[in-house]
Length: 120
Image 1 (cartoon, rainbow, N blue to C red):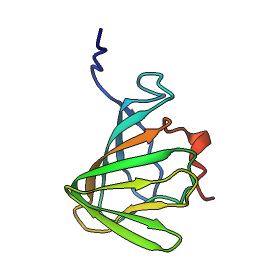
Image 2 (image 1 turned 135 degrees about the vertical axis):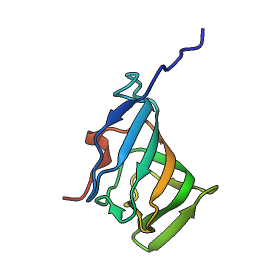
Image 3 (image 1 turned 30 degrees about the vertical axis):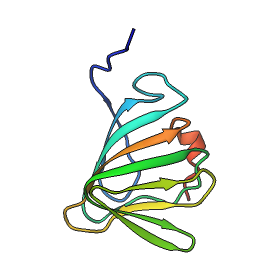
Image 4 (image 1 turned 90 degrees about the horizontal axis):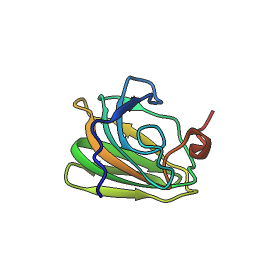
């Protein structure tokens, strides 16, 4: 039988400004360690520390622009586009434009603080 997820759980975000993360599926809301799916809303000027996670992260931008930096440069991912950040590769996410961004992030396996390996 399918499992209904009645509501997400709001989880704490890293970064220089408040960002909303509503986890629908993952370690916090459903106890799932194989995948996490979260709805993100970050303000303009938000930036989080760089990271080299032990998971792949698939991101679909719904509104605004999400900047994804790696060691060679940056990609601006706009509404209607998606990006894949591959496990083990250093990346940093930010929302450089004033309106911020709204996006869905899927992590395989599920996001965890222990597996994200954020910069100090």
